[in-house]
Length: 239
Image (cartoon, rainbow, N blue to C red; front, side, top):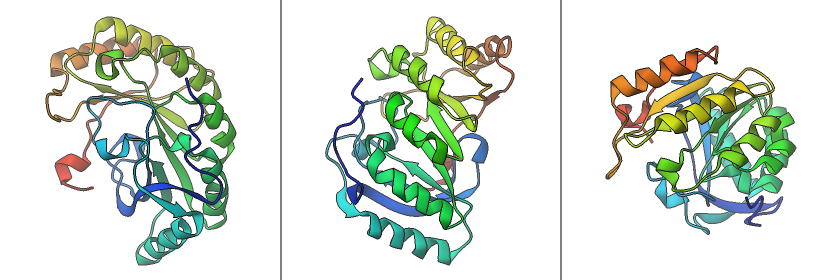
C-alpha cells in the first residue's frame, strides 16, 4: 500500500474546503467541529459521500497559513472543541498535518482525524498528536480491493483514543464481518466498533436491518463496545 503520494509538504497542500458543522458519525455525534477537508484518496469506495475529493489531484493548493487563518475565523465565530481533519484521505498529507496539529493544540483545539485506515506509516507519525482517530475498515464488497493486511498493520499503530467504523451496504458478507471482528478483537487496546448502515447513494443500498443486528450480535461476543449508528448529517441536510 502506497504510504505517500507526495501531494503536499509542510507549507501547502490540496484543500477542498474548511467549514463549521456538526459531526455526523461516531462518539462525537452532534458535536460542532471545524472540518478541514483535504483532497485526494488512495481508495474509491462506492458509498463515498465526498466523491469529488477522491481524484488525485483534487481541491486547490492552499498554504498552511491560509488554513490557520480560516480556522481562526471560524473559531472566533462560535465555540468549537476540535478540528476534524478529513478528506479524501488526510494521511496522504502527513508533512502538512504535523505542524498544523501541533498549532491546533497550542490554540486549544483537539485533533480529530478521520481516515480510511490503510496508511500505517503516516498514522504512526501523527498518532501522538491525535486526540481521537476515526478509523474505517473498508469491506472488499464496497471497495473492490482487499485491504485487510493494511488494516491489520494500521490497527497496531492506533493511539488508545480511537474507534473503528464499518460502513455496511446490502452487499456486506458474513465472511467479511468475521474478519472485521477478528481485527478489532486482536487490537493492542480495546476499540469501540461502530456499525454504520450505508447512506443510500446512487446504486448503494444500506444493509437490511435484520442482517445488521445479526452482525451486531456476533460482534458482541468478542468486542465490548459495539454501537449501531447511521450517518446523521444527511438526515439533518448538513454539509
